[in-house]
Amino acid sequence: MNISASPAAGAATAALTAPTGQPASAPLTRVALAYIDQHFDLYLRFGEPARIVRLDRWRRSAVFLPNAVLCRVRWQANDYGTIRWQLMVMQACTPLDAAQRIPGVRPGARLLLHAEGENQVRAVLERIDAIEALGIAPVAVSPAYWRTLANRLAARLPLPEYTAERHAAWLTGRAQP
Image 1 (tube, rainbow, N blue to C red):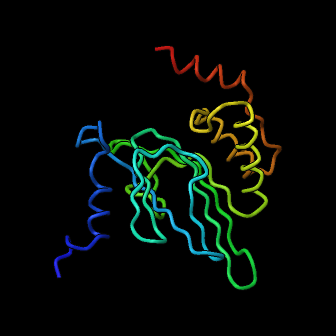
Image 2: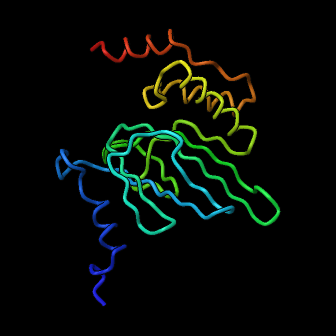
């Protein structure tokens, strides 16, 4: 059977092509997403994919342009309850940038925050909700804030708030040459 004739192969090939309006040479980051009812959920909490490719009933692939910030959450359960909570905030890279290998992220990304376990994931989700309550899109938040949040989680210190003043300072600093 010809591999290119299968619908899954066609969807995978579409994921490799640049989104409309982007040059064909644009380096893309592909993030695997999946859902199996009551057992497994790998989804985006925030992020603006250039394209989402549906591979089959349970799997999708989100395609991101360089420097896009996204948050992927992994929840896994067995017959006895939840066995894994994981949250990662990452930034898509170009091929020349240093990137970490992350399962399900091709070719890799810059990991800004990694939370493991129910308590850490819930704490980060609360911070994301607070940022959205300020009217700020989480993708526009300073990467330094996500790194600070990750370091505070690792050190078991109180988590910092992201304020409108901090966001304005980030935007001002980014706009200056």
